[in-house]
Length: 560
Image 1 (cartoon, rainbow, N blue to C red):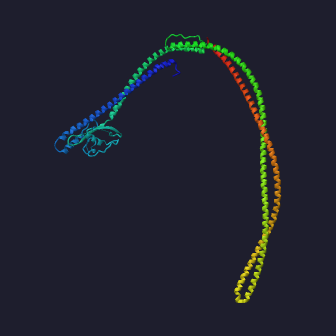
Image 2 (spheres, rainbow, N blue to C red):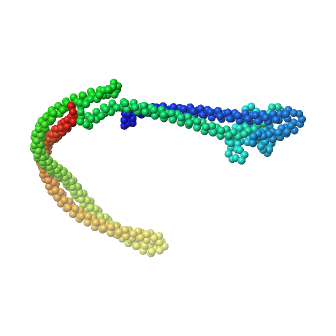
Image 3 (cartoon, rainbow, N blue to C red):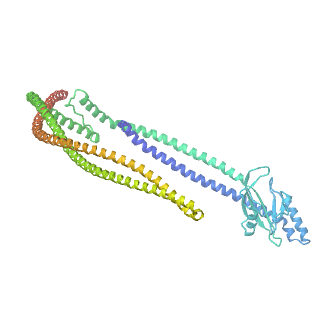
């Protein structure tokens, strides 16, 4: 909507509220008429239902009046009641109207539509909705209300239709309940027809209101268009003048005529005052542009000289910074190499000290090994002597065993000569001889083992003597290695001290070179920054020159 013209907006401002009012009126009228129609529909339904109720009550009263003479007559009671039942079953009204009746126990005594129902108790019969309507009809007859609505299928139909019944209790001693009923679906059909007629009436009324509203809208639109055109014409003149200033020759001497004293006249007066101030402002801007052009040209010359000096300083400083940087890199490389050499010398010194310690430990171990070898040689020599002594003892045992064997043999011979008296002694002699034989055999085995021990002990003694000789030679070589390692350690320590001094001196030179490099780099950065600033100033001066030309062109378009 903000893209519409003012005339269109004024038309909308006058027409939209009117359209809303008309629409509101139509909605209110429709709502009220619909409410009135609903009230009328309810009245029609109520009147028709009341008419149906009155009709049923009249039918039941007519039936009771017909059998009243039989009830009040004299004679056999059963005969009179039978005549009354026959009369009620025969009574009809309309095309399918009939009467029904029940006694106090709810047994059917009258049924004009189906004689098969007479004599049955139908208190629990229910309609399509599960409603025990017969029980309710008997109850309504007793309490005086009389009317009961229920759903029951018409003859030959499957679906149930609404039905209204009326029952009443016959006065007197018979205590019969007489009633009748008919379908009331015709009421809803009549109500639906009435609803259609009321809806058509409402639509006709709304159509008439809508047509009247269209005529009113047309008149208001014509009047609003004329007023909008009268209001917009001065504004169009103002817009044309502004367009001429912005897109035409820029004539700031043009003024709008002030013809009215309303808001439009105020706009014209304000426009004239605004153009006058713009005219003065443009004149002052022209003078300022001329001064700006002169100042810009002077600043441009100064900036060019500054840029040249800064460029020369930047190149010289860059060369100095590169030389200092190369020197610092060389010194740093020397410092790194010296530090690496010092570190390698320290590692060699540590390794020499570690090797010297290992040699000392090796010499100690060899000395202990030599002592152990000497002690082992002494023990093995003692073992050899003990083994020889054991061999002598074994020889003695063997001699004793041989003598015992000879003695036992002689004893056995003497026992054999003695006969029976020497038999027991002969047995003992045999046992002794057997024992001596075993002892001799064991002694032989011990002798063989001792000979093996003697041979091993002698071999061990020879090996121990060889080990003693080799241990002495190893100790001598280890002493020589210890002396050499001590000399290496001393030399490496000297080299380490020298490399440390070289590294320290190189680090100091590196620090000094770094400081020089930083200072030179700062000078180079300052020179570079000065060069960039000079370039920016030069660009700014050029832009100001272009701006001055552009402003001159713009201002020259206005006629002052």
